[in-house]
Image (tube, rainbow, N blue to C red):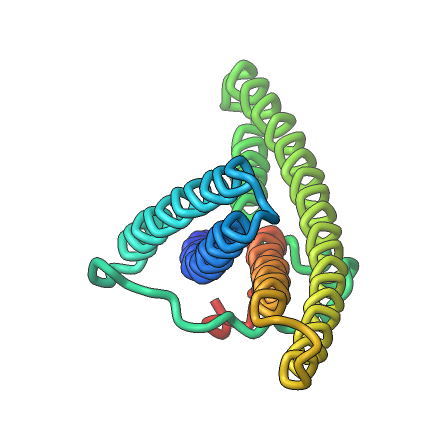
Length: 258
């Protein structure tokens, strides 16, 4: 489960890095067009040299951001390759379909006993109970029995502590997953609104009521909304991976039963 969680995190990071390059590429193209527009306006007396300089500064900043985004792809690719054993230069394909969270918190709590930490603690408790049983006789020194009883008390506390920690971790992971689903819906709604605006502006361009520059700005807004939706979708997947680790059940839909 931990390996799956790490791999999911590396994959989504690479996927987002790749998508961010596309966003920043479109941003650079938009800023390049803005410089051209400012230069034309300056030639017509409708813009100053400062306006042109500001546009060029914005372009320089976005160009650097694009370079940084490309570097992040390289780093994310290397991390995924290390985790999976794939060759260098590996790329993420498409976004992973996120399953619904159909199970309840109470249902997941019922399976906590299978977690390795709890299994280990219960095994230690069983061993301590056996030690006390074996030391309870007339020929075992009293000190040995006392030590065994102390170890038993410690093991009982460890079981209680492990159970409490597991329950708290599970509850927190479950709430995080629910929050991620809600934020994903917000991102989906924003993407749908951006898509509608872009479709309308594309029609307005065809009818001659807006310019290609204005449509490019709308396209950039749509691209950013799509990127935000991808991030939200990936956050859900990562939250499910964390919940899988906390519950001992694979809830990601990846890899079947682990």
